[in-house]
Amino acid sequence: MGKAKKRSLHLGINDRITNLSREDAVIATLEALKKHNGGHEAYNLITLFGLSAEELLEAGASYETVMSLQGLVQ
Image 1 (cartoon, helix red, strand yellow):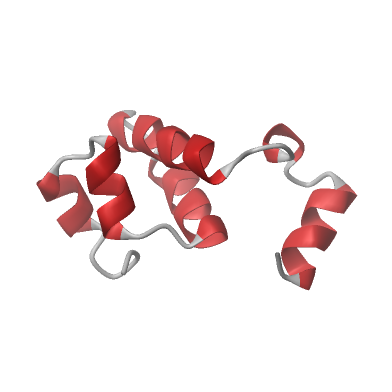
Image 2 (image 1 turned 90 degrees about the vertical axis):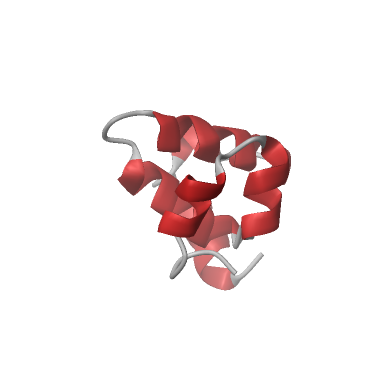
């Protein structure tokens, strides 16, 4: 975990995700993508954890959804 991530978690900026594992982050990202206005939350989780397209597809995201995030995921 980088310095910035540690600092933001320590300061309590992201209180609701302090104990979020990578698997939980993938699930939370999928739920955020399914919500109508969850794009911002999904973007934050993808960039925070560096989620890949393969992880999202294996977790159950549709191919079209992952392709719409083409500039964001690897």
